[in-house]
Image (cartoon, rainbow, N blue to C red; front, top):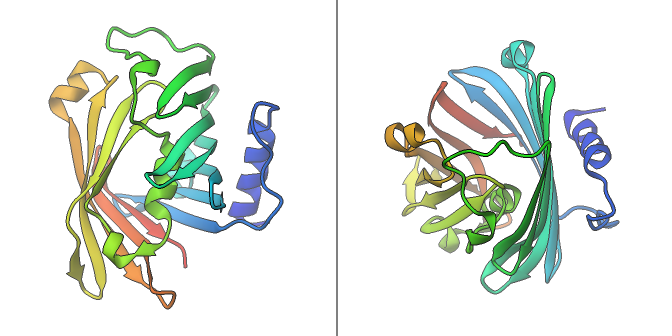
Length: 245
């Protein structure tokens, strides 16, 4: 059983609740698997599977540490997201995630009303912080998985880059912005930046308010641009995400 099959099976068990719509019975529209490298060392794996119809979407994602990093740092993240597809793009309706690190775990579930979170549930409950923000005030955001499928879905070349999205994960608000595309050795590179907005420690906002990175796309036989690679500086050295063919 490969990583994708094992991971999605685990996600289905961990996240299955009556509050979430059942996974579509049709074959998925989009299946993507990625490897994460930190400083040249494999640090993790990610799988994301999405079902897309004319008016709605359902996505499941799993991330975990792997390789040498996985031997000393055991962490995982599973999540599902669903929502509507409108002329303005993807709109989150419900998101839930289970993260685990060593012996600690955290479950988060968010529901949206239009373009704003309507409720956030956490188990165990979030520990109050002086810098925390009000979830229902985060209008104009989408959840992390919806943001991922927005970026990872193959798209026409003329629609690449020159766009931004604001994300809320239940506690923090941040943005990912892509600049103008440019050719780069047979691929298309889009300069990008991850920008912290609110809900972070004051020290983080002062010292590392943003992280620049780049995303490379390749145009395939279907005429669409597919994400092939992303890379940028991180707190652990150069971080690289590579798509498996």
